[in-house]
Length: 263
Image 1 (cartoon, rainbow, N blue to C red):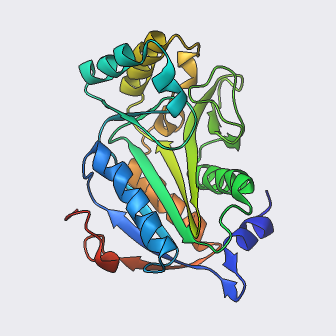
Image 2: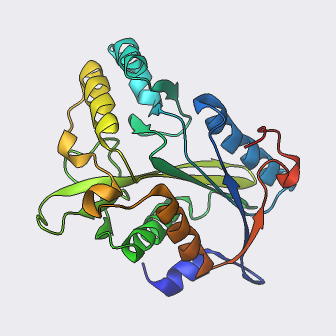
Image 3: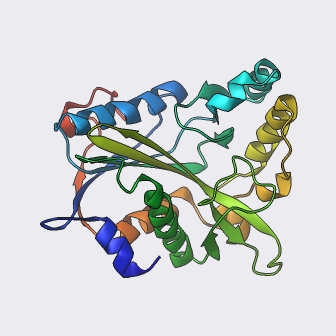
């Protein structure tokens, strides 16, 4: 995906898109964080808010896909998550189980759109490349594409490449999308720090579900570039967006009358 194509993705008919950047300073709780993204989507659909970028560090969560709940080992997988301090939830989007915690950054991009279904698949490629560019800007060798054995496999996962071992690749970003009449929510989870607990909870939950995967594919950005922090990735993501859209900041607790609570 070229820079020009990315810019066009973030432009409206009248020119560059303006995005309101909302930094949520702390988690509202695993379930509430997921619900709140959908509430913002409802506000966008109703025309009460415009294009919005919400960024936050989540509580320890394992978000299962709908298909996971139909497997005989789902209850055991959910208990494995609880035993390791992760809250098991079921997301509305597809895919398999994905884990995240305070060492990750969630990026929710919400847009009102008259024909939200149009371009829904292409958004995965667009935003995968945008996030890969953000990671590359802080020194991570990042690329878009599924890697063999990854958890919650996806065609547009963003993975990182070990500089010393190019054959060793780790998944760094998973994405999901919710499309409704009048708007869309594109959510990305970037694993930045402390990958060991994520590897462990995925190992136990996938074993309970009877799903095969390669634990070596679960990693974090600072496994590849030591010293990287969530704050560094947040700054890089915002800078990447700033290259393609006009940005303005808004306080989380006051933004468009949100009711998520003080962050």
